Amino acid sequence: MSETIETDVLIIGAGPVGLFAVFELGLLDLTAHLIDVLDKPGGQCAELYPEKPIYDIPALPVISGQELTDNLLAQIAPFGAEIHLNEMVEGVSGDVGSGFRVTTDTGHVFAAKVVVIAAGGGSFQPKRPPIRGVEEYEDNSVYYAVRDRQKFAGKRLLIVGGGDSALDWCLNLQPIADRVTLLHRRPDFRGAPDSVNKMRALVEAGKMDLITGQVTELHGENGTLSGATIKTDAGESPLQFDYLLPFFGLTMKLGPVSDWGLELDGNLIKVDTGTFATNRPGIFAIGDINTYPGKLKLILSGFHEAALMSHAAKKIVHPDERVVFQYTTSSSKLQKKLGVK
Image 1 (tube, rainbow, N blue to C red):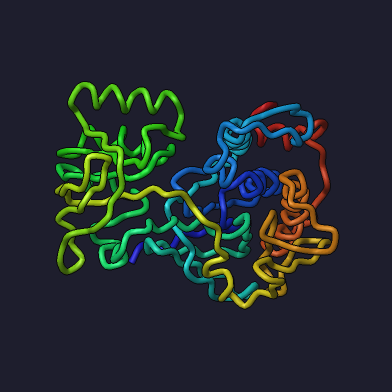
Image 2 (cartoon, rainbow, N blue to C red):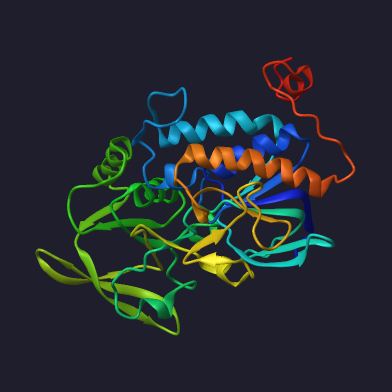
C-alpha cells in the first residue's frame, strides 16, 4: 500500500474547470491535488480537440483547446498542485466531519477535507476494438493506455489506430521496443501532420513497420497473445507480437461516481447553485458533470462554479478563519501569491 497523500481539496478531473479550481482554491490558501484518467491534463479540450478553435472564452477571441490548457497550467503553477494522470478514482469513503478517503485504481490513497468532482461528462473510457475475444487478453497482453513505458522495452508491439494517441506512442515506444508495427485501416491519418511525418520517416528508415489493414483474429492462450491474423488488400496473413495497444478513441461514462451516494439526474449530479455542493456534505461538483435549473454547459460557466465552490470549501477546511474578499488587481497579498508582486 502506498502512503496516504494528504491535501485540503482533492479534485477529480484535470480539464479546464478542474485546473481553474486550483487557482481559485490557491487564492484562499487551500492546497489541491488533481486526478485524471487521461495521460495528460486538459480533459476534452486536450484529448478530443487540441487544435480546434474555441471562441467563447472571455477576452480571448480565439484559442485552441491545447493553448487554453497550457495557459491554465501556467496560471496555476504558483500553487504547486500535483496532477496524478492515468488514474481512476474507485472509491470515496468518509464524511465532512472525519474527512474523506479516496482510493484509485493504481493504489494511491488520498486524505482530503473536501472532494470536488470536475469530471466533465464523466470518466473517459477507451473504446474496445471490434475484435472477437479481445476481453480475454485485456490487462495482460492488450492495453488501452501506457502507464509504464518500460513494460514494453524489448517487446514486439502492434499499435492500432490512426489518431494522435496511436502516433504518439509509436514515436515514444519505438526507441525502446524490439519492434513497433502500426496498423491502420486506411492510408490516411487523423493525427498531427508532424507526428505522421516522423512516423513515416521511421518506416522509410526501416526502424518500424506500417500496415494498412485490420485485425480479424487474435492468437494466444491463457490471456497471453502470441500474434494475430491481419487482413489487407493482399489477403490475410499472420503477424507475431507480444502486446496489442489499440487506440480507437474514448467514450464518456459516469463510471464509479454513480456509486458514491450522490443525487443524480440521469448521468448528471444535482448541486446547490450557491456553493455547487452535492447532497453529500463536503463533496462538490463543477463543470459539465453537474446540473441545476438554467445550467449551460460552457467552460466559462464552470469557471464561475469553481470560484463559488472554492469559497464554500474554505469554510469547511478552515471554519474558524474569516475570509475577506479581495481582488487580484488590487490585493498585494494575492499578487504575492501569484509571484507578480
